[in-house]
Length: 388
Length: 112
Image 1 (cartoon, chains in turn green, cyan):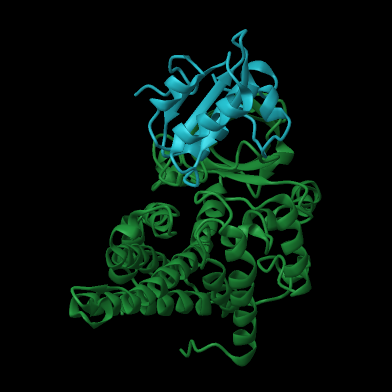
Image 2 (cartoon, chains in turn green, yellow):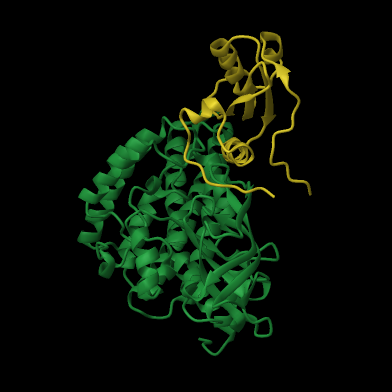
Protein backbone atom coordinates (compact mmCIF):
# COMPACT_ATOMS: atom_id res chain seq x y z
CA UNK A 1 0.00 0.00 0.00
CA UNK A 2 1.22 3.49 -0.84
CA UNK A 3 0.58 5.94 1.98
CA UNK A 4 2.11 9.02 0.36
CA UNK A 5 -0.61 11.69 0.38
CA UNK A 6 -2.15 12.52 -2.98
CA UNK A 7 -1.90 16.17 -4.15
CA UNK A 8 -5.50 16.69 -2.96
CA UNK A 9 -4.75 15.20 0.44
CA UNK A 10 -1.55 17.25 0.73
CA UNK A 11 -3.49 20.42 0.03
CA UNK A 12 -5.87 19.65 2.91
CA UNK A 13 -2.97 18.68 5.18
CA UNK A 14 -1.25 22.01 4.45
CA UNK A 15 -4.48 23.87 5.12
CA UNK A 16 -4.96 22.23 8.53
CA UNK A 17 -1.26 22.61 9.40
CA UNK A 18 -1.47 26.35 8.73
CA UNK A 19 -4.65 26.55 10.82
CA UNK A 20 -2.93 24.86 13.78
CA UNK A 21 0.20 27.00 13.54
CA UNK A 22 -1.41 30.35 12.76
CA UNK A 23 -4.67 30.15 14.72
CA UNK A 24 -4.50 27.55 17.48
CA UNK A 25 -0.94 27.77 18.80
CA UNK A 26 -0.88 31.59 19.18
CA UNK A 27 -4.19 31.50 21.14
CA UNK A 28 -2.97 28.58 23.21
CA UNK A 29 0.08 30.57 24.32
CA UNK A 30 -2.24 32.80 26.34
CA UNK A 31 -4.17 29.99 28.03
CA UNK A 32 -3.47 28.03 31.18
CA UNK A 33 -1.16 25.09 30.32
CA UNK A 34 -3.94 22.68 31.30
CA UNK A 35 -6.76 24.50 29.55
CA UNK A 36 -9.10 22.48 27.37
CA UNK A 37 -11.35 25.26 26.09
CA UNK A 38 -10.87 28.43 24.07
CA UNK A 39 -12.61 31.64 24.96
CA UNK A 40 -16.15 31.39 23.47
CA UNK A 41 -15.57 34.28 21.04
CA UNK A 42 -12.35 32.71 19.74
CA UNK A 43 -14.04 29.34 19.40
CA UNK A 44 -16.94 30.82 17.42
CA UNK A 45 -14.57 32.74 15.13
CA UNK A 46 -12.49 29.64 14.39
CA UNK A 47 -15.57 27.49 13.75
CA UNK A 48 -16.52 29.98 11.04
CA UNK A 49 -13.04 29.52 9.56
CA UNK A 50 -13.24 25.72 9.49
CA UNK A 51 -16.68 25.99 7.90
CA UNK A 52 -15.23 28.30 5.25
CA UNK A 53 -12.46 25.73 4.70
CA UNK A 54 -15.15 23.11 4.05
CA UNK A 55 -13.80 20.95 6.87
CA UNK A 56 -16.35 21.45 9.63
CA UNK A 57 -17.82 18.16 10.85
CA UNK A 58 -15.41 16.05 8.82
CA UNK A 59 -16.46 12.87 10.64
CA UNK A 60 -20.12 13.30 9.71
CA UNK A 61 -21.19 10.97 6.87
CA UNK A 62 -22.10 12.67 3.60
CA UNK A 63 -25.70 11.45 3.87
CA UNK A 64 -26.04 13.55 7.02
CA UNK A 65 -24.44 16.71 5.63
CA UNK A 66 -20.76 15.95 6.19
CA UNK A 67 -18.09 17.06 3.68
CA UNK A 68 -17.56 13.52 2.29
CA UNK A 69 -13.92 13.05 3.23
CA UNK A 70 -12.69 9.44 3.25
CA UNK A 71 -11.28 7.87 6.40
CA UNK A 72 -7.66 7.81 5.17
CA UNK A 73 -7.74 11.56 4.54
CA UNK A 74 -9.50 12.13 7.87
CA UNK A 75 -6.73 10.17 9.57
CA UNK A 76 -4.06 12.29 7.89
CA UNK A 77 -5.89 15.43 9.02
CA UNK A 78 -6.35 14.09 12.57
CA UNK A 79 -2.57 13.68 12.78
CA UNK A 80 -2.22 17.39 11.93
CA UNK A 81 -4.99 18.57 14.25
CA UNK A 82 -3.32 17.04 17.30
CA UNK A 83 -0.07 18.96 16.96
CA UNK A 84 -0.51 21.46 19.78
CA UNK A 85 -0.54 21.43 23.58
CA UNK A 86 -4.18 20.36 24.06
CA UNK A 87 -4.20 18.40 20.83
CA UNK A 88 -4.19 14.85 22.16
CA UNK A 89 -7.64 15.03 23.72
CA UNK A 90 -9.00 18.30 22.35
CA UNK A 91 -7.68 18.60 18.80
CA UNK A 92 -8.00 22.22 17.72
CA UNK A 93 -10.31 22.72 20.72
CA UNK A 94 -13.19 21.16 18.82
CA UNK A 95 -13.31 23.86 16.16
CA UNK A 96 -13.62 21.25 13.41
CA UNK A 97 -16.85 20.02 15.00
CA UNK A 98 -17.76 16.45 15.71
CA UNK A 99 -20.14 13.76 14.66
CA UNK A 100 -21.21 12.74 18.15
CA UNK A 101 -21.47 9.07 19.02
CA UNK A 102 -21.18 6.76 16.03
CA UNK A 103 -23.97 4.47 17.33
CA UNK A 104 -26.62 7.14 17.00
CA UNK A 105 -26.27 6.94 13.23
CA UNK A 106 -27.66 3.40 13.56
CA UNK A 107 -30.70 4.60 15.52
CA UNK A 108 -34.26 4.35 14.20
CA UNK A 109 -35.89 7.39 12.60
CA UNK A 110 -37.68 8.49 15.75
CA UNK A 111 -34.43 8.34 17.73
CA UNK A 112 -32.55 10.14 14.98
CA UNK A 113 -35.06 13.00 15.16
CA UNK A 114 -34.76 13.21 18.92
CA UNK A 115 -31.01 12.67 19.28
CA UNK A 116 -28.89 12.50 16.11
CA UNK A 117 -30.06 15.62 14.31
CA UNK A 118 -29.98 17.85 17.43
CA UNK A 119 -26.47 16.52 18.08
CA UNK A 120 -25.31 17.34 14.55
CA UNK A 121 -26.84 20.82 14.93
CA UNK A 122 -24.80 21.28 18.10
CA UNK A 123 -27.92 21.44 20.30
CA UNK A 124 -27.27 18.24 22.26
CA UNK A 125 -24.22 16.52 23.68
CA UNK A 126 -23.91 12.85 24.53
CA UNK A 127 -21.90 10.54 26.76
CA UNK A 128 -20.90 6.90 26.28
CA UNK A 129 -21.70 4.79 29.36
CA UNK A 130 -19.94 1.46 29.14
CA UNK A 131 -17.24 1.05 31.81
CA UNK A 132 -18.26 0.03 35.34
CA UNK A 133 -16.44 -0.13 38.68
CA UNK A 134 -16.27 -3.90 38.11
CA UNK A 135 -14.08 -3.41 35.03
CA UNK A 136 -13.74 -1.84 31.62
CA UNK A 137 -11.47 -4.06 29.54
CA UNK A 138 -13.94 -6.93 29.44
CA UNK A 139 -17.31 -5.18 29.37
CA UNK A 140 -19.23 -8.28 28.27
CA UNK A 141 -18.50 -9.90 31.63
CA UNK A 142 -18.01 -6.81 33.78
CA UNK A 143 -21.34 -5.08 33.17
CA UNK A 144 -23.43 -5.39 36.32
CA UNK A 145 -25.89 -2.58 35.65
CA UNK A 146 -29.24 -4.33 35.29
CA UNK A 147 -32.26 -3.41 33.21
CA UNK A 148 -35.51 -5.14 34.16
CA UNK A 149 -38.85 -5.06 32.36
CA UNK A 150 -41.51 -2.79 33.84
CA UNK A 151 -44.52 -0.90 32.38
CA UNK A 152 -43.58 -1.04 28.67
CA UNK A 153 -40.05 -0.10 29.50
CA UNK A 154 -37.00 -0.92 31.54
CA UNK A 155 -35.76 -0.03 35.01
CA UNK A 156 -32.01 0.53 35.23
CA UNK A 157 -30.03 0.03 38.43
CA UNK A 158 -26.25 0.15 38.71
CA UNK A 159 -23.18 2.33 38.31
CA UNK A 160 -20.75 3.50 35.62
CA UNK A 161 -17.30 5.03 36.03
CA UNK A 162 -14.73 6.93 33.93
CA UNK A 163 -17.53 8.44 31.86
CA UNK A 164 -16.58 11.67 30.11
CA UNK A 165 -18.99 14.58 29.71
CA UNK A 166 -21.93 12.92 31.49
CA UNK A 167 -22.36 16.01 33.66
CA UNK A 168 -22.74 18.28 30.62
CA UNK A 169 -24.55 15.96 28.23
CA UNK A 170 -28.26 15.97 27.47
CA UNK A 171 -28.31 12.22 26.87
CA UNK A 172 -26.09 9.17 26.87
CA UNK A 173 -25.79 5.67 25.53
CA UNK A 174 -25.87 3.24 28.43
CA UNK A 175 -25.17 -0.49 28.34
CA UNK A 176 -27.02 -2.71 30.80
CA UNK A 177 -27.54 -6.40 31.37
CA UNK A 178 -31.00 -7.52 30.29
CA UNK A 179 -30.40 -11.28 30.53
CA UNK A 180 -28.07 -12.42 33.29
CA UNK A 181 -27.77 -15.93 31.87
CA UNK A 182 -26.56 -14.97 28.40
CA UNK A 183 -23.17 -13.25 28.94
CA UNK A 184 -22.37 -10.94 26.04
CA UNK A 185 -25.64 -11.92 24.36
CA UNK A 186 -27.55 -10.50 27.32
CA UNK A 187 -26.55 -6.84 27.05
CA UNK A 188 -28.78 -4.08 25.68
CA UNK A 189 -27.96 -0.51 24.71
CA UNK A 190 -30.27 2.26 25.96
CA UNK A 191 -30.48 5.97 25.21
CA UNK A 192 -30.92 7.74 28.55
CA UNK A 193 -31.85 11.42 28.84
CA UNK A 194 -29.80 13.00 31.60
CA UNK A 195 -32.91 14.53 33.19
CA UNK A 196 -34.50 11.10 33.65
CA UNK A 197 -35.44 10.55 37.31
CA UNK A 198 -33.01 8.09 38.89
CA UNK A 199 -30.04 9.19 36.75
CA UNK A 200 -27.30 10.74 38.88
CA UNK A 201 -23.80 12.08 38.19
CA UNK A 202 -22.41 11.25 41.60
CA UNK A 203 -18.88 12.58 41.47
CA UNK A 204 -15.93 13.81 39.49
CA UNK A 205 -13.09 11.34 38.91
CA UNK A 206 -9.72 13.09 38.72
CA UNK A 207 -7.04 11.54 36.53
CA UNK A 208 -3.61 12.34 35.14
CA UNK A 209 -5.46 14.42 32.60
CA UNK A 210 -5.92 17.38 34.90
CA UNK A 211 -7.44 19.56 32.18
CA UNK A 212 -10.52 17.38 32.20
CA UNK A 213 -12.31 14.91 34.42
CA UNK A 214 -14.37 11.79 34.14
CA UNK A 215 -17.50 11.11 36.19
CA UNK A 216 -19.11 8.33 38.16
CA UNK A 217 -22.78 7.65 37.47
CA UNK A 218 -25.52 5.98 39.42
CA UNK A 219 -28.77 4.57 38.04
CA UNK A 220 -31.32 4.15 40.80
CA UNK A 221 -34.69 2.83 39.65
CA UNK A 222 -34.17 4.81 36.46
CA UNK A 223 -37.12 3.97 34.16
CA UNK A 224 -36.83 4.37 30.39
CA UNK A 225 -39.43 3.41 27.80
CA UNK A 226 -39.03 0.79 25.06
CA UNK A 227 -38.49 3.68 22.64
CA UNK A 228 -35.10 4.24 24.30
CA UNK A 229 -33.66 0.87 23.26
CA UNK A 230 -30.92 1.46 20.65
CA UNK A 231 -30.83 -1.46 18.23
CA UNK A 232 -32.23 -4.72 19.52
CA UNK A 233 -32.69 -6.10 23.00
CA UNK A 234 -29.75 -8.32 24.00
CA UNK A 235 -27.67 -7.16 21.03
CA UNK A 236 -26.02 -4.17 22.68
CA UNK A 237 -22.57 -5.66 22.87
CA UNK A 238 -22.16 -5.56 19.10
CA UNK A 239 -23.01 -1.84 19.26
CA UNK A 240 -20.30 -1.27 21.88
CA UNK A 241 -17.73 -3.37 20.09
CA UNK A 242 -18.21 -1.67 16.76
CA UNK A 243 -17.60 1.69 18.36
CA UNK A 244 -14.47 0.52 20.16
CA UNK A 245 -12.93 -0.77 16.93
CA UNK A 246 -13.72 2.34 14.87
CA UNK A 247 -12.50 4.69 17.55
CA UNK A 248 -9.04 3.15 17.57
CA UNK A 249 -7.98 4.77 14.27
CA UNK A 250 -8.49 8.45 15.25
CA UNK A 251 -7.20 7.55 18.72
CA UNK A 252 -3.95 6.33 17.14
CA UNK A 253 -3.81 9.38 14.84
CA UNK A 254 -3.89 11.73 17.85
CA UNK A 255 -0.94 9.90 19.42
CA UNK A 256 1.03 10.22 16.19
CA UNK A 257 0.30 13.94 15.92
CA UNK A 258 1.55 14.65 19.42
CA UNK A 259 4.59 12.41 18.87
CA UNK A 260 5.49 14.38 15.73
CA UNK A 261 5.14 17.68 17.60
CA UNK A 262 7.32 16.44 20.48
CA UNK A 263 9.90 15.03 18.06
CA UNK A 264 10.11 18.30 16.12
CA UNK A 265 10.66 20.18 19.37
CA UNK A 266 13.43 17.75 20.34
CA UNK A 267 15.17 18.12 16.96
CA UNK A 268 15.06 21.90 17.17
CA UNK A 269 16.35 21.87 20.77
CA UNK A 270 19.14 19.40 19.94
CA UNK A 271 20.37 21.64 17.13
CA UNK A 272 20.34 24.72 19.36
CA UNK A 273 21.46 23.51 22.79
CA UNK A 274 25.15 22.97 23.63
CA UNK A 275 26.66 21.07 26.54
CA UNK A 276 30.36 20.72 27.27
CA UNK A 277 31.16 22.69 24.12
CA UNK A 278 29.14 20.56 21.71
CA UNK A 279 25.65 20.75 20.25
CA UNK A 280 23.34 18.03 21.55
CA UNK A 281 22.64 17.11 17.93
CA UNK A 282 26.29 16.09 17.51
CA UNK A 283 26.15 13.58 20.37
CA UNK A 284 25.46 9.99 19.48
CA UNK A 285 23.30 9.42 22.57
CA UNK A 286 20.95 12.15 21.43
CA UNK A 287 21.08 11.17 17.76
CA UNK A 288 20.00 7.65 18.64
CA UNK A 289 17.09 8.92 20.70
CA UNK A 290 15.98 11.01 17.71
CA UNK A 291 16.35 8.00 15.41
CA UNK A 292 14.26 5.89 17.76
CA UNK A 293 11.62 8.65 17.74
CA UNK A 294 11.61 8.55 13.96
CA UNK A 295 11.17 4.76 13.95
CA UNK A 296 8.27 4.92 16.42
CA UNK A 297 6.52 7.66 14.46
CA UNK A 298 6.95 6.07 11.05
CA UNK A 299 5.79 2.64 12.18
CA UNK A 300 2.77 4.09 13.99
CA UNK A 301 1.88 6.12 10.92
CA UNK A 302 2.20 3.09 8.64
CA UNK A 303 0.01 0.81 10.77
CA UNK A 304 -2.60 3.51 11.37
CA UNK A 305 -2.93 4.38 7.70
CA UNK A 306 -3.08 0.66 6.85
CA UNK A 307 -6.04 0.27 9.23
CA UNK A 308 -7.70 3.36 7.75
CA UNK A 309 -7.16 2.09 4.20
CA UNK A 310 -8.77 -1.26 5.03
CA UNK A 311 -11.70 0.53 6.63
CA UNK A 312 -12.00 2.75 3.55
CA UNK A 313 -12.18 -0.29 1.31
CA UNK A 314 -14.84 -1.87 3.49
CA UNK A 315 -12.55 -4.74 4.50
CA UNK A 316 -12.33 -6.17 8.04
CA UNK A 317 -9.93 -3.97 10.00
CA UNK A 318 -10.27 -5.10 13.62
CA UNK A 319 -6.73 -6.49 13.83
CA UNK A 320 -5.22 -3.55 11.97
CA UNK A 321 -7.04 -1.09 14.25
CA UNK A 322 -5.71 -2.94 17.30
CA UNK A 323 -2.17 -2.84 15.88
CA UNK A 324 -2.50 0.87 15.13
CA UNK A 325 -3.80 1.72 18.58
CA UNK A 326 -1.16 -0.41 20.30
CA UNK A 327 1.82 0.85 18.31
CA UNK A 328 0.79 4.51 18.26
CA UNK A 329 -0.03 4.76 21.97
CA UNK A 330 3.07 2.88 23.15
CA UNK A 331 5.38 4.47 20.57
CA UNK A 332 3.93 7.92 21.16
CA UNK A 333 4.64 7.59 24.87
CA UNK A 334 8.24 6.66 24.16
CA UNK A 335 8.68 9.61 21.77
CA UNK A 336 7.39 12.11 24.31
CA UNK A 337 9.56 10.55 27.03
CA UNK A 338 12.73 10.76 24.89
CA UNK A 339 11.90 14.30 23.82
CA UNK A 340 11.60 15.31 27.48
CA UNK A 341 14.95 13.67 28.20
CA UNK A 342 16.60 15.65 25.40
CA UNK A 343 15.11 18.88 26.79
CA UNK A 344 16.50 18.18 30.27
CA UNK A 345 15.00 20.26 33.09
CA UNK A 346 12.96 22.42 30.72
CA UNK A 347 11.18 19.30 29.52
CA UNK A 348 9.71 18.77 32.98
CA UNK A 349 8.17 22.23 33.28
CA UNK A 350 4.72 23.53 32.45
CA UNK A 351 6.46 26.14 30.30
CA UNK A 352 6.53 23.54 27.52
CA UNK A 353 3.73 21.21 26.38
CA UNK A 354 5.84 18.08 26.89
CA UNK A 355 4.78 17.46 30.51
CA UNK A 356 1.09 17.62 29.58
CA UNK A 357 1.65 15.26 26.65
CA UNK A 358 3.59 12.92 28.94
CA UNK A 359 0.69 12.66 31.40
CA UNK A 360 -2.01 12.45 28.77
CA UNK A 361 -0.11 9.99 26.58
CA UNK A 362 0.15 7.62 29.53
CA UNK A 363 -3.62 7.38 29.61
CA UNK A 364 -3.60 6.35 25.95
CA UNK A 365 -2.13 2.96 26.78
CA UNK A 366 -5.25 2.23 28.82
CA UNK A 367 -8.05 4.24 27.20
CA UNK A 368 -10.12 2.69 24.38
CA UNK A 369 -8.85 -0.77 25.32
CA UNK A 370 -5.49 -1.25 27.07
CA UNK A 371 -2.40 -2.52 25.29
CA UNK A 372 -2.97 -5.99 26.70
CA UNK A 373 -6.45 -6.20 25.15
CA UNK A 374 -5.09 -5.04 21.79
CA UNK A 375 -2.51 -7.83 22.01
CA UNK A 376 -5.30 -10.30 22.78
CA UNK A 377 -7.20 -9.17 19.69
CA UNK A 378 -4.08 -9.54 17.55
CA UNK A 379 -3.22 -12.92 19.12
CA UNK A 380 -6.69 -14.25 18.26
CA UNK A 381 -6.06 -13.30 14.66
CA UNK A 382 -2.61 -14.93 14.61
CA UNK A 383 -3.64 -18.11 16.40
CA UNK A 384 -7.16 -18.41 15.07
CA UNK A 385 -8.50 -19.55 11.76
CA UNK A 386 -6.88 -16.67 9.89
CA UNK A 387 -3.33 -17.84 10.61
CA UNK A 388 -1.14 -16.55 7.83
CA UNK B 1 -10.49 4.90 50.13
CA UNK B 2 -12.14 8.12 51.21
CA UNK B 3 -13.20 10.59 48.57
CA UNK B 4 -13.29 14.24 49.59
CA UNK B 5 -15.71 16.15 47.45
CA UNK B 6 -15.77 19.26 49.58
CA UNK B 7 -12.77 21.33 50.63
CA UNK B 8 -12.23 20.71 54.34
CA UNK B 9 -9.04 22.65 55.17
CA UNK B 10 -9.10 25.13 58.09
CA UNK B 11 -10.14 28.73 57.45
CA UNK B 12 -7.46 31.39 57.95
CA UNK B 13 -7.55 35.15 58.17
CA UNK B 14 -6.88 36.80 54.82
CA UNK B 15 -3.99 38.99 55.92
CA UNK B 16 -0.43 39.59 54.76
CA UNK B 17 1.15 37.40 57.41
CA UNK B 18 -1.00 34.32 56.66
CA UNK B 19 -0.68 34.76 52.92
CA UNK B 20 3.12 35.05 53.16
CA UNK B 21 3.19 31.56 54.67
CA UNK B 22 1.48 29.98 51.69
CA UNK B 23 3.43 27.67 49.37
CA UNK B 24 4.17 28.60 45.78
CA UNK B 25 2.31 25.54 44.54
CA UNK B 26 -0.71 25.08 42.30
CA UNK B 27 -4.14 24.41 43.73
CA UNK B 28 -7.55 25.76 44.60
CA UNK B 29 -8.80 28.16 47.25
CA UNK B 30 -11.95 29.60 48.75
CA UNK B 31 -12.63 33.07 50.13
CA UNK B 32 -15.40 33.78 52.68
CA UNK B 33 -16.78 37.12 53.87
CA UNK B 34 -16.91 38.32 57.50
CA UNK B 35 -20.15 36.35 58.08
CA UNK B 36 -18.47 33.17 56.88
CA UNK B 37 -20.38 33.07 53.58
CA UNK B 38 -18.29 31.62 50.79
CA UNK B 39 -17.95 34.31 48.12
CA UNK B 40 -15.40 32.88 45.69
CA UNK B 41 -13.78 29.62 44.64
CA UNK B 42 -10.53 30.14 42.74
CA UNK B 43 -7.92 28.07 40.95
CA UNK B 44 -4.20 28.72 40.73
CA UNK B 45 -2.60 27.57 37.50
CA UNK B 46 0.95 27.50 36.24
CA UNK B 47 0.87 31.07 34.95
CA UNK B 48 0.82 32.39 38.49
CA UNK B 49 4.42 33.36 39.42
CA UNK B 50 4.31 32.04 42.99
CA UNK B 51 1.24 29.83 42.87
CA UNK B 52 -1.20 30.03 45.78
CA UNK B 53 0.84 32.74 47.49
CA UNK B 54 0.64 35.10 44.47
CA UNK B 55 -3.07 34.53 43.95
CA UNK B 56 -3.99 35.09 47.59
CA UNK B 57 -1.78 38.19 47.67
CA UNK B 58 -3.77 39.47 44.72
CA UNK B 59 -7.06 38.58 46.45
CA UNK B 60 -5.95 40.45 49.59
CA UNK B 61 -4.92 43.51 47.59
CA UNK B 62 -8.23 43.58 45.70
CA UNK B 63 -10.63 42.62 48.50
CA UNK B 64 -8.96 44.17 51.55
CA UNK B 65 -8.91 42.78 55.10
CA UNK B 66 -11.69 41.19 57.17
CA UNK B 67 -12.13 38.04 55.08
CA UNK B 68 -11.04 34.42 55.53
CA UNK B 69 -9.63 31.89 53.09
CA UNK B 70 -8.54 28.28 52.81
CA UNK B 71 -6.40 26.50 50.25
CA UNK B 72 -5.75 23.04 48.92
CA UNK B 73 -2.50 22.24 47.10
CA UNK B 74 -3.56 20.25 44.08
CA UNK B 75 -1.80 19.63 40.76
CA UNK B 76 -5.21 18.83 39.28
CA UNK B 77 -6.29 22.37 39.99
CA UNK B 78 -8.57 22.67 36.97
CA UNK B 79 -10.66 19.55 37.42
CA UNK B 80 -10.73 20.13 41.20
CA UNK B 81 -11.94 23.71 40.63
CA UNK B 82 -14.76 22.50 38.40
CA UNK B 83 -15.63 19.89 41.00
CA UNK B 84 -15.80 22.41 43.86
CA UNK B 85 -18.00 24.74 41.83
CA UNK B 86 -20.40 21.94 40.87
CA UNK B 87 -20.56 20.63 44.42
CA UNK B 88 -21.32 24.15 45.71
CA UNK B 89 -24.05 24.50 43.12
CA UNK B 90 -25.52 21.14 44.16
CA UNK B 91 -25.35 22.00 47.87
CA UNK B 92 -26.65 25.59 47.68
CA UNK B 93 -28.51 25.83 44.37
CA UNK B 94 -26.18 28.56 43.12
CA UNK B 95 -22.53 29.46 42.65
CA UNK B 96 -20.64 31.69 45.10
CA UNK B 97 -21.51 35.31 44.35
CA UNK B 98 -18.21 36.26 42.71
CA UNK B 99 -18.12 33.11 40.55
CA UNK B 100 -21.71 33.69 39.45
CA UNK B 101 -20.70 36.99 37.80
CA UNK B 102 -18.60 35.15 35.20
CA UNK B 103 -19.48 31.46 35.43
CA UNK B 104 -17.41 28.90 33.53
CA UNK B 105 -19.20 26.19 31.54
CA UNK B 106 -20.31 23.75 34.22
CA UNK B 107 -22.00 20.39 34.36
CA UNK B 108 -24.37 19.02 36.97
CA UNK B 109 -23.44 16.87 39.94
CA UNK B 110 -25.78 15.23 42.41
CA UNK B 111 -23.41 14.04 45.12
CA UNK B 112 -24.80 11.27 47.29
